[in-house]
Length: 198
Image 1 (cartoon, one colour):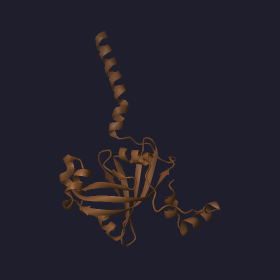
Image 2: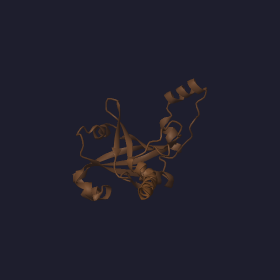
Image 3: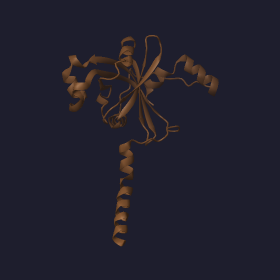
Image 4: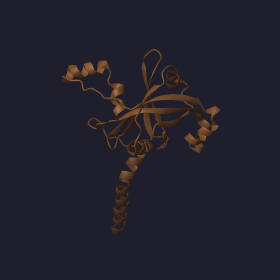
């Protein structure tokens, strides 16, 4: 766990809960202004085809939204900044509106087959894609650039890897197809052998 994560998330109320349930509340030491992503985090982020984005409304309600795309659609611009293109959708703009009131976000990235998850805390801003065509070209694949309406930029504060204890493995269709391809090949070979013998 990066140092800034505990300093940011362990509040007085969290310490009280830790004390109540476990009889102790570990302290947190001084940490840097933000934690830089290492090669481990960068490689993990670049392999993801989805993540969850949490924001908070001006009335204090949390909101979590799913974002998906081709692996690597969440771009790592530097060890302290991420970005992604936001496409035309249901026109609710809840995350975009929430960020106008509070720029704090949490990104939750899952690797279900390997039972691994990464949480990233940050400060986000939204830019109108119409005002930044050069950034659209940088953050979106050519075939979908015309659908981009907004660009999200996340300045990383910290991150945390979670334990895999309660992650249920799940697989994409592509992962399932890759896993069963040798079996299908063998079945086809055996069927051909049966045809020759009959």
